[in-house]
Structures are given as C-alpha cells and as structure tokens.
Image (cartoon, rainbow, N blue to C red; front, top):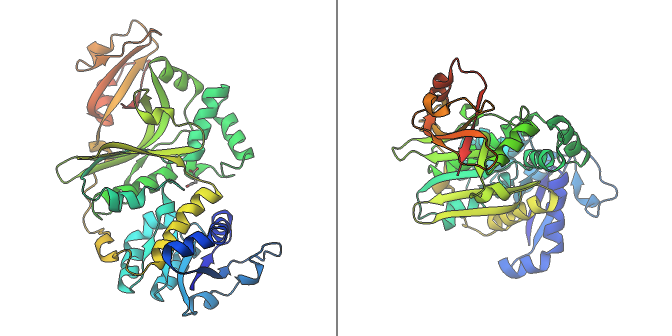
Length: 401
Ligand code: HSE
C-alpha cells in the first residue's frame, strides 16, 4: 500500500480523494499497488465527509510520517502552500499540485528541492485543468522543437466572452453571471486581468524552453475587463472571434516571446470555436505540425483527474528524473513585450479612413460587412502605436490565424 496525504480539502483536494477511491481497483491493477489517503491536512473539520476520520489540523502528523510518500497540495496561493510544499519535499515526500501560482513563482526552487531530496514535484493540473498538456510537452513531444503555443487557458474569461457574445450582455453583466454560477471568484482580478493566464503560459514557456525560466511577473498581461460587445461584434463581422490568448513563440534565435492579450482569432483557427468554460491549447512543433489539446480546464473532477494522474506517476518509483526537469533563472531568454513582434488587426469606424496609407505593408481584410480593417504582420505594439499616433478613430487587436 502507498500512503499519501492531501493538503487542503477543498474542491480539488476532495475531488482527488473521490477519484482515487472510486477508481481504486483499476488504479491498483495498473500500478500493482493500492494508493491510500492516510491523512488530510486542513484547518476545518468535515463531519459529513466519508474521509472525516483522516482529517488532521496538525502538519507534523503529515510531514513527520515516514509512511507518507506523496502529498497533494491543493491549498492554492503562494504562502501556506509554499511552506508546506517545502516541508514535504525537504522530508523526501513527493508533491503534486494544481497550484499554478506556486509553480510559476517558486518552481525553480521547488523542483531543485525535490531533486535534492530524491522525490518529485509534478503539476499536470496547473495548466488546462483536466487536459493533458504538461506531460505531453515533457514526454510525447520531446523530439520536437516547440515553435508556438497559443492557449485559451482561463475558463472564467472564456465563459464571460461567450456570454457577452451569445446573450449580448456587457462585461459587467457577464461577470456577475459567471460569479452566480460559481465560475468566477468574488475578486475576479486574477482571471479577468490575465494574471492566471500569465502564470499558466509562464509554466508552459519554461518547459518548452528546456527549463529556461520564464518569470510570470515579466510577461505582459492584458485582460478582458475593457472589452465590449461592440468589440466582439466587430471581430465576428470580419470572420474572427474575440478570445483571451496566452501566447508563446520561439523566435528561433535562442530567444522567446510570451504574452497574454485579447486576440481576434480567425475562424480558420480551431481556438475560435472554444466556447464557455472550456480550455484549449494549440501547440506547434517543428515535426508535429499543429495539435490542439481541448477539454475542461477547471472544476473539481476534471482537475482531480489530472492531480490523481500525477499521484500515480509519483507513486511509480523513478518515473520522472527531476534532474532533467530543473528550471534555471540565471539567464532570461524571454523578450520584453516592447520587443515582441505580433500580427494585428487594425480597424476604423470611419469608412473614409485610408488604413493602407497609414500602414503601407497592411493587407485589407475582405469582408461582407463592409468593416474597414487591415492586417499588419510582424510588428511590435510600440511600432504600431507610433504609426497610428495622431490618427483618431483607429483601434487594433492582436490577430491569430
Ligand atoms: N480560475 C481558473 C479558470 C481556474 O477560470 O480557468 C482553473 O485554473
């Protein structure tokens, strides 16, 4: 029997107990051993839970127990979760987590700690919830140079944008609806200002740049709180959908670019069809071409499915060699946003505005709605802004084909 502990018995922690318990037989068949949740560490009591007898408020009962091999950290945030993760790894207990904030801010240190103590730190659930993306990048796609990632990695904002489109309601109205349904937090800042997506693309970028750490605080992040139903209608009028995209691009010269911003996503791109709380991550490898990983990016059981998968991985001795996964923050290869070239749709409500005169390299966007729009490729936002300086009535958004 392999004993594990759950740190934080919230939505994901309790979901993980359910997955491991309800599928105990098939998991036992697959790994040849039984996984048992021996302790649940939480401040609260859970008198109605079938796992109530395992709940403890005493961290020493977990970190001082030599029988516990794996701890599931589903506390969230980067304070208590950080302390407990360090305690567990220092004691040689592997940690698996869905905590993107912790992985993206302290992953360098925590992976090194796991490595030094002969255990593992795994975080499949930190990006894309239940969608397999971390392990595919590390394993299945290991033979590729990953040249591009474009992800809808935040379900709350995608739900809000879908509601605005389908019900014609404002950002504020759609946010309220998302809060009522339990998708959005009471403080929606991290989701709606792109901070959650910033953390997730930082993790994916650090992985595909072979451990060259991408600091989330240096990633430009623009959220959805300023978007309007007019922006959405305009995107659709020219054959696009308005989506919050977390982007990674390998510049091919040893540097990479990562940012989060609303994009006009061309209908030809599969990400344009991703609706509601769903997530999708498009990955382009030099030999793979493009693949899209799609599914439920949040929620108790989908996220628990990924966490439980990592628990199984951590229980199989020697499954992951942390030495090959360490992140290095000594040199940054990530460009500042001001130096990142992107494609943009530039548009004007003024039909007489000659956009090609302002932007000679731009191509007109043919559309039946008669919207005056052009696409400008491979330009920094700063350069674009300077070309548009002094011209009124012109707007732009990043463009993804
Ligand atoms: N707040 C996140 C989202 C939860 O809306 O996608 C999953 O990371």
